[in-house]
Amino acid sequence: MINVIIADDVQILRAGLKAVLAQDESINVVGEAGNGKEAFELAIRLKPDVVLMDMRMPDFDGGYGTRQIKEKLSGVKVLVLTTFDDKETVEKAVASGADGYILKEMDNEQIINSIKAVAGGINVFCDNVFQSIKKETAIQQDPKNFDLTEREIDFIRLICDGCDNKEIASKLFLAEGTVRNGISKLLEKLKLKDRTQLAVFAIKNNIV
Picture (cartoon, helix red, strand yellow):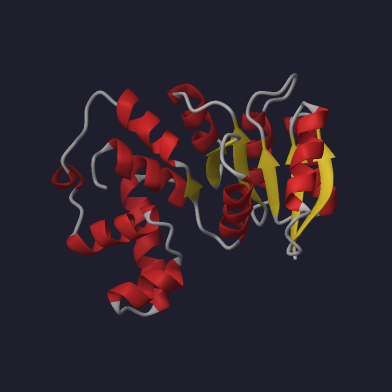
C-alpha cells in the first residue's frame, strides 16, 4: 500500500484528487494539507510514502514544504503536481529536492502511475517540464566539457528514461552495487544532490 498526503490550497481539488486516487486499491490517502508547512507537519506525524505537492500555496508554498520534507524526512518522496511549468517554478521544485514534477492536466491514470513510480524510487518528469527546461536554457554544452565517460553517459540516459538501479544494471550487464556506486560518484563529480537534479542537468546540457 502506498500512503499519500495531498497538499493543495483548494479544498475541492484535494477532494477530486482523493476520489481519483481511491480508484486504485494500492494507494491510500492518509492526509490533506492546505500549504507547505501543513504538509511537512503531517508528513512528520503520518510518515507517508509520497506527498503530492502543489507549488503555489499561501503562506508556505510547495517549495518550502518540499525542502523541509526532503531535509528532515529522507524516506518520504515528494511528487509536485501543479498547473505551472515555467522555468522558475520548475527550478524551485528541483532545488528543493522534489522527486518528480507533473502537471494537473495529465489524465487520472498518468497521475496514479506517476505516484507509483516515485514511490518505487523512479524520478518522474512530464514532457512539458522537459520542454520548458530546454526552451528556457540559452546555452547548451557538449557532454565532453564535463569529462563524462561513456558509462556515465549511459547511466544518465537510463536515469532520464525512468530506470531504477536494478533496471540499469540489467540493461548494462552490471551488478546493482556497481551501478549504485557509479551513480553516487557521478553525482559527486557533477556536484549534484540527487537523480532528479541529474535529470534536469542532462536536459539543460543536451546530454539526452
